[in-house]
Length: 293
Image 1: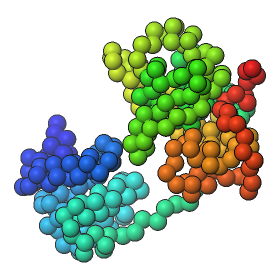
Image 2: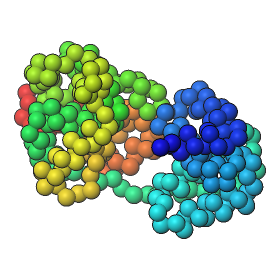
Image 3: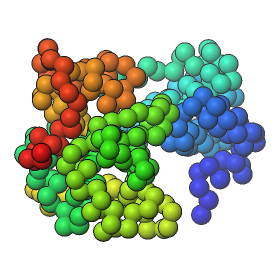
Image 4: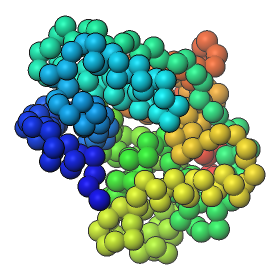
């Protein structure tokens, strides 16, 4: 069965040339592959719907299409959002400013993230039966890593001498160093020996590959179920917990911003619970859960 992209390439005149131009611009501007995939899929959908390229559609046709998406219950909010974002990027690329500015605005929902308490974090890290799964969840929390940062983490990135983790090409294609938990450092060699780690800290089933997103998500989901935690948490919740617990432990917001790799302090302000923090030595919040000297 052909994919949506394959169908668009095969049936819509000029789609492949447009797709190539779109991908090239996305990559050259430092956007992620995930961004490209999300946008081009929606562009393919609207192309197939009208049987022509979106750049040839009228403002009214685009408006009708978006209105249908909003009213059809089978479409999610993210589907609508990525359709608008994809079209906005496409129209900018083709200098169709009149069409771009007439796309609807997408107000951001101001929702607070789910946060686990420190006792819930301890329950979560104790829940998995496999040492690997316990170690993975604790490591991600201990350094506030994003999923893709944890996936691509290599053995040589964990420096137990300097007590730092080197995060390569985080969001925005930026490298950074984050704190290495003493708890993690004390168990790292044991973990590497037990799982014969040579390159990736969390290897996939195929040799030379890292663990997939679905594999990481399954571990988190199973741990939540086993621990009895009913909050609507996901793997990214551990990053939220890292930031919140650091602030609650008295680490100043500038240090938290640097650890998280945020480009703007406003993003980190989401986690601000009190108004003033005294500057302290940066330590991982995981080490406040366990008595590690």
